[in-house]
Image 1 (tube, rainbow over the protein chains, first blue to last red):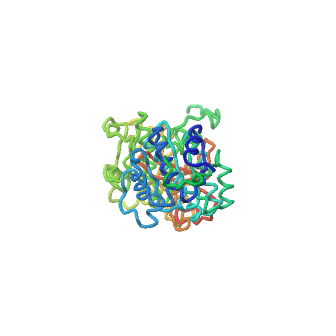
Image 2 (image 1 turned 45 degrees about the vertical axis):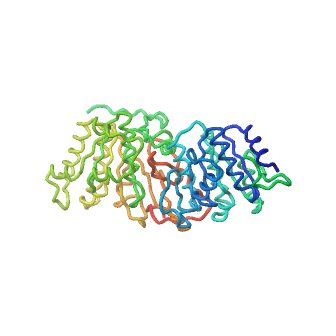
Image 3 (image 1 turned 90 degrees about the vertical axis):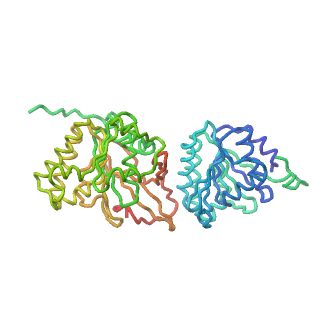
Length: 199
Length: 264
């Protein structure tokens, strides 16, 4: 288990085209999101494509803004809001997918954003495999990950797949271990509250 | 009578008409074999017109003369309704690389506008007029949207066969690669409305709607393409401003087809 500082140090040595599974405890969840987007967008000046099937893009944008992380340079693929009837208008930087069951369309929207906004370096965050697993059979999810990650590798993207420790599933761990180069568990250091972690 | 050249050109060496739709060119091992006539078939809303138009726009960008013959819809209205491509430039039309002709205008020229059924002679005249357009503009890519609407006025299987054979032979002889849009109803258990078109065409690109757990996905499948090895797998497509995008259809779950004719 590493804390967020330890995670960022690990990620510094990542090569482009890498895929990393991040198993995050609930308390560190938002810290990890903000740390990842901040590190890859602001510090490394990469385009970040944030795919959410957990909470709506508008909520994530609010969280990032609360941490003074501007959302320009972040493209959201939002697979939640349509399903919850929360996609009445399409804000700039947000692309909707009708449902988290439309896995092919998630891949297509990522592909679209990579072509529409070509950058030398791109980071793709999948948040999260657990929420996709609620809506999809493990076989199709495994196939999706395999195809998506192979495609993102061919684009030299950094890929992060988030999972939540509290929703531990051996099947999902095995799935991630099979397609990812690294599997990192992230949590607060003993005695540290997640909100106090400096990112 | 001149001697025929019977030399066999291996598939890999056949010149390709690169569609410019990256994933489709990958599926086709580099593009449509030059001079092939391909049926783009599917039910309504599956993306046939958009795919066909993109094929022409990429050709025009590469300075090939391209012609879109619109049968049922005013071509300018159709242009306004398709996805606004990032790579589309009005100058392609102004410089003559991309042209549009409405079939009713051709019918009017030939005195066919009010005819409910064309005779064999009138079919010959129609083919001749299309050939004139191909030669006038040295057209290398052609789309007819849709041949089903033309066939509707031919009525008999013999006439449809005659029209399709003549059309494809003529286009091929001028080195013109064509996409012939074919409309079928969702429950149709075949690739074309009259059954004749699919047998004659060099290729069939099948577009459909696939329902899975209440989600409706647009799909594309190359069923047949003479002159090249190709994938016969089914892909999911998205019509975007950067063009048609394709990813493999995931097979992990059970599927039901609601569109795409022979698919079902």
